Image (cartoon, rainbow over all chains, first blue to last red; front, side, top):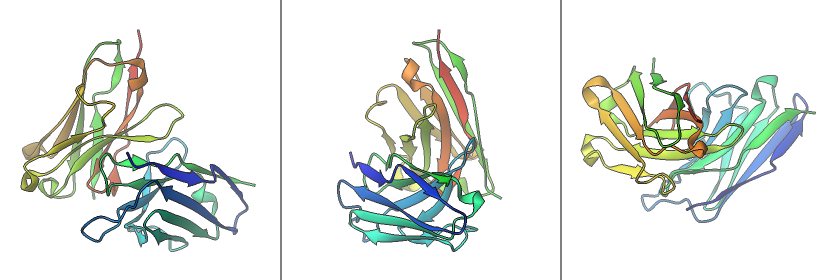
Length: 112
Length: 116
């Protein structure tokens, strides 16, 4: 199975600070069709996961553009340019290039 | 508006079975793969199963840890997907989420508790 390793596990930030989360894969997520199926999700406390980014860098509808995704192959990054209070929660990367789909262990974003 | 609603959770004794349902609306269900993902209390997300659509002969895929104990199915006429779980164990206690396609829409989840 593909293992996704997220760092850091916990991220302390102040409002307005820019932060980044890393997601490293145990194998390339480049599919034979040329797509890289790497998503980012946010799960606020007590809520279901909310999709943020798909195909590495494409924003889901309604997601603010302070969120951005980048990377290729096995190394991916989610950046939040100016954290807002509503961004707090646990961030997960997720891959579906390979079966079974797998998720990273999560990064908890908290206020400093 | 896309809506996904899971039902069928509850308290089940070890060794028991449960059938979860996921009713959807607001999109052409026939066009999409559907998935179940679960989350044990205080833990991360775990993909459980996927069922493809008619174009892909309703092919199914399962997490190896659950294979043999779970069956995913769908009823396109009802825009619904189902998850049958048998031989339930304490470690199956989790919120079970139904998700569309590439995970662009998620339901609110349904809690399954396995306990005597």
